[in-house]
Image (tube, rainbow, N blue to C red):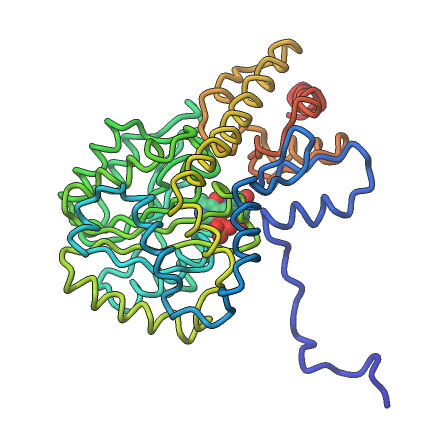
Length: 410
Ligand code: PLA
């Protein structure tokens, strides 16, 4: 039987490019150099450069394993009830009137990405204005997720490269000229990739404009607790929108703040005007989910539900989370100091001003390619660095690379 060389029914299939973010890890894994450094994907590493499983997660897992009454039955289509209840409290606040009034529906989804996708498909089926405005720049997967969900994607100005800060006027102008009812994707905190967030006063102005224009906010909350180290502070943007009684969607991820990346744990909440609408919305979310993946996985959600429900575990989580956030902030200071010490040309204060996991360095794609080639440092070509992948021992190497790139590559 001839198998080699014969015509395949897939002969016309062209090779697709690697993903701009996850492809960085693929390239990194191929590199044999002992000094290689992966600052591409936003994945937390310890000072020793190792992935971290939180103690509180280990503890929860142990308890789950030891509990013989736990079984592996299918979850309901909307996932684990306790997980959904606790997730809503985490993002909206434990005393949220919207939750008390039963006008929030929360469904467990496959991490942040799955929550965005389910929310996007629900909107494409049931919402009249099928246009979503996303910031420039934004997480590279956003336009793909929403386009495939069936929405048409447009953009609003967000980041000003000249000031390395928020283009607040541009943002307001673009939202103001969006058609009434359009959906607006907002990063709840720690904007990816820029690390630039609106102030609370600016959030309030954004809220007023969005409500005035009848736009529909869709929050992506992938970094709650990672921006400031406080879960409540990082939820403020979402909470001011919920407090005004209006409607919105929120996609939550536990990948970063609980370190559950590969467990794929997240939630989609839709805040509605009243309990009756929320119930009908939930019934339709089930119709989106059932043919997509039927129902979500049980393990990660059980871990999260246990940690969120148990006061001691919750407290331990907040301490471990703050530890991660603080280490990232300390990396910002160390990198900034290292560049100052080298007299690297340019103003690098944005390294300590930006918020969350990433620094948007301002390095161009040639400089990034140079750093990868000469220094084995892997990062996305837009100049984004995952600060969570750095440690005190690797900061000097990165600073040397940035210094060389800035002084030798235009
Ligand atoms: N939303 C934003 C803004 C993100 O940055 C990410 C992850 C997600 C959603 C999705 O996360 P989840 O599905 O794993 O919960 N962004 C990462 C990883 C950390 C990635 O690209 O998948 C990043 O490096 O940008």
